[in-house]
Structures are given as structure tokens and as C-alpha cells.
Image (tube, rainbow over all chains, first blue to last red; front, side, top):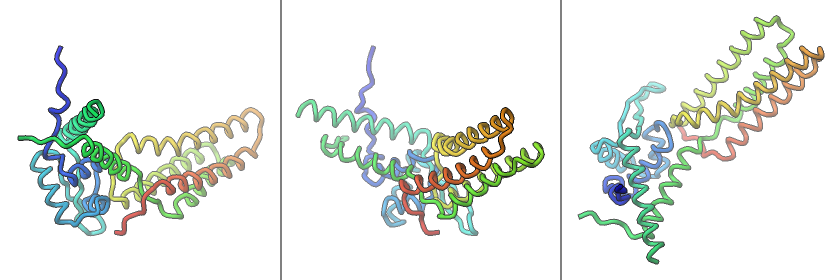
Length: 104
Length: 146
């Protein structure tokens, strides 16, 4: 029987600090408004837009527009692929930490 | 070629991810009126036991519907839709004590003909709702400005 290499789940797309935090935020909830994610991360809208575009391009995040109080708001959601990729990435990070502890 | 981070960096990133997840799922502070208003509303339902059974049933359903609508409105303002398991936990924290008190008062009235458990239930429901919302707010992050 072969065991999958946990490091194979390491995902360069998710690894960037802001994108990791976006994924962590969206993973914890069902859906979050763009403005809320921006506030939670403490970044400028343009920065969040850029990272969301990368995650959307990778198929990890979907965007939905909804009107509330006559204003258009964008809601972000982690896709099924995004959830799987994020979980695999965390597994890879844990494996790296475990390697360090074993060697150190 | 893919370059993996150092173990110390990976550890820091895991901690950051955990922190971000906790902050997102912590919920936001509800309006100050939310606990007392809903506690009062539920207390009215308890005190309505003198009405015929069908009127009570209608009032209870209406009270629960109003409560869920108020809760949904509060949550809509948060900018976050919570995962089903979190919503289930919140609903259980509200409905289970209510159901227990309601059942207890019903049994005491049915078996011993006592009416005062309804008043006691109303007081307990009110206090519980106020404390529950206060407890949620203590662990929550500030509400975002619209």
C-alpha cells in the first residue's frame, strides 16, 4: 500500500500570505462579503481584488453579486476544489513543521 | 521549481491561518436590544398560556418565526454567512432551553395544576436570552459599519 506524500498538497497559489488568510477566512464560513474579508485582513480593496482574482482563476473562489440596501455587494465563497486544496496545503505545512521538529 | 518554506515559517503560517479562521467564525456583536427584546418576546409566549391551545400554538410559531427573522437580519448585517454546523449550534443553544422550560411548565400544569411555572419560565427565558446574547457578544468582533 502506498501513502500519498503530504508535501504533494503544497499549493503555491494558496501559499502567498494574503491568499492563505483569504482561504482561511472563507474556509471558516459559508460565504463572506468582500468588504468584511477586506476588514478582517486589513488590506486595501485593490490588494484583495488582486488576490481574489488569482484564487478565482485557479478555481478556488467564486464571486457572487447581490444587492443589499440598494448597493451591489460581492460575496466570496471557497469552492469545493478550494476547500480541498486548502486542506491539502495545511497538511503539507504540518508535514514541513513535523519534519523540522524531527530533524531539530 | 517549487520551494517549500522553512519549518519555522510553515509553523507561523499555520498559526496565522488558524487565527484568520477563528476571527472569521467568531461572529459579530449583536445589537444591544437583541437579547432583551427576544427574551421579552419569548417571555410573552410563556405568559400566554391562559389562551386556548390553538392560540398558544399560533403565538409560539409566530414568536419563533419573528425570532428567526430578527436573527437572520442581524446575521445579514455581519457580512458573513456561517456554515450550517455553526448555525445549528446557535439555534440549538436557543431552542433547546426554551423547549425544556416550555415542556416543564406544561407538565407541571398538566400534572399538578400549577400555573406559577409559566411565570417562572418567562423570567428564566428572559434572563437566559439576555445572558446568551451577552455571552455571544463577549466573544465576538465588532460589527462592521455599513
